[in-house]
Image (tube, rainbow over all chains, first blue to last red):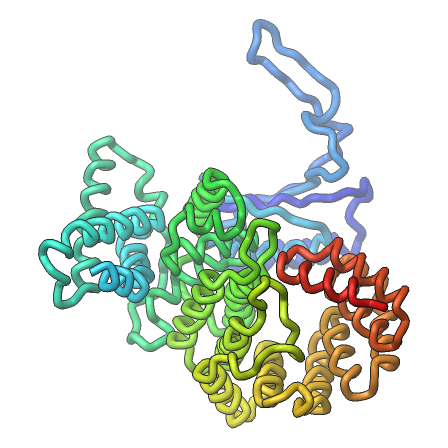
Length: 107
Length: 405
C-alpha cells in the first residue's frame, strides 16, 4: 500500500541546513526499512503554470490553480502496511522537515 | 418476544458486526448483514420461537446475508473487491480477553485519524447498534447528515486502510484513552444535554455509554482507567433522578435528595474505586475523578462531605493535567474548605482562559452571592444564563439570579 505524504508550508523560507540534515536522516531510514518509493521538493506557487486543455484550445495561466496561504513544498511517496504505519512515518517526517504533512492513500 | 429481540440486540449486535468484519473484511457489508439478520429475527422469532442460541442464529443468518450480497456484487464484476478488503495482518493467536473481535471493532471506530464526532457516530452505530436516525436525533443533526458522516467514515477506513486490529502494546495506552474519550463524550452529552428542545438528561445516551464502557471493561479487565471511567459514570448516573426537580429545574449536589440516589449503582462504583486503590498503581484522571465522586456519594449529607479529601484529589489531578477547567473545579471544593473569598481569588485568575465557559460564570456567581456581592453576582448569572445550553440548568440559574436581594 502506498501513501502520499505532502509537506505543507506557509512560509516561503527554504529548509534550513539543520532541517536538510534531519530530512536526509529520515530518508535514509525510509530506504533502510523498505518504505522509500520516491520523494522531492517543489518550487513555490509563483513558479507554477496551469494548463487547461479541455476546450478547443489549451489555456495557459501563470500561477497556481489555487491561491492559498498554505501550499505544497514537497512530498514523499512511501510504502506502508496500513494507515497506522503510514501515520507513524509521517509523524517522524513532519518532525524531520519541521513542517505540517498530509497523508493520503493511493487508490 | 420484543424483550428477547432487544436483549439479543444488546448482547449480540457488536459480536455479529465484529465477526463479520473479520470474516469479510468490510465494515459496510458487516453492518448491513447484521441489520438484515436482526430484521429477519423480528419477522421470524415471534412465529418460530426464540432459537436456543440467539447469538449463533444471528451470526449464521448474517453470514448468509453477507455471502448473498457478495455474490450479487461479484456478478456485477466488482474488480475492486480485493482492494476494498480491510487490512488485517494479525496472525491468529491464542484468544485472550484482549483478542475479542469486538475490541478490534472499537479501536477501528475510535481511530485517531477520524474526527471526534465521526468516532462517536461510528461507535454508536457499529458497536452499540443504534440506528442512524437514533444517532442523528441524539446529536440533533439531520438524518442525511449523520448518514453521510458514517458513510464517509466507512469509506475512509477502507480506502486509507485503517487497520482492523487491537493496537500494539506501545500504542495501547494512548489508543485506549482515545476510546474512553469517545465514551465519556457520549455520557456527558446524555448527562447535561444541550439544545433547547432536548430533555435535560438523556437517559438513552448515559445508559448507552455505560453499557459500552461495561463492555470495554469486560474486554480489558486490568486497565485502571477503564475501571475508573466506569466507576465515574456509575457514580454520576446514580444521582440522575435526584438531579432534575419535578418542575424541570437542575438540582445542585448540595440540594439533592440523597435518599433518591441509586444505592446499587453507588455500591458498584465504590467497589470499582476500592479495587483501583487496592491495585496501588498511580491512577489516571478518570480514576481520580471517580475517587472524587466516591467521596461525594459517601456523604449522607452535603455537610458530611470530606472536602479536604476532595481538594487533595483535585491537587493530584492538577499535577497531572494543569488545565483551567480542573483548576475551576478545585476552586469549588476550596470554597467549602477555606471559604468563598479564597476560592474567588483563584477563580478570578482563570478569566482569560474560561470567559466563554459557562461553569466559570456559574461558579463566580455563586461565590459572589455567598460573599453578599449581589450586583456582581447578578451580572455573572446573566452571563452564565447566556452561555448555558441545558434547559434545566438555565431554569435553575434564572431562579437563583432572581432570588438575589
